[in-house]
Length: 102
Image (cartoon, helix red, strand yellow):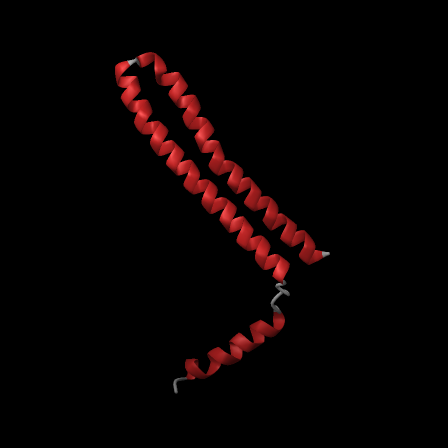
């Protein structure tokens, strides 16, 4: 074996003893799962809504230019769906960190 192949496991053991892994409970894992689901599903729904509204909006704006402002407002409301999912995910993750420290 080379010299660096012998020292890597020793170094990894020392680092692991200096920084022990935090206890990861079932509650924390379900909160992480729920945060991921909320971000993913809300992002997916937001993407579908933006795609459908964008397609219909571009077609209708070509026929009636007055509809542009309404289309932009509906696109903003569709985009907020993804933002709400992100906010819920952040709140769930903050709940995990506050439960872990207390």
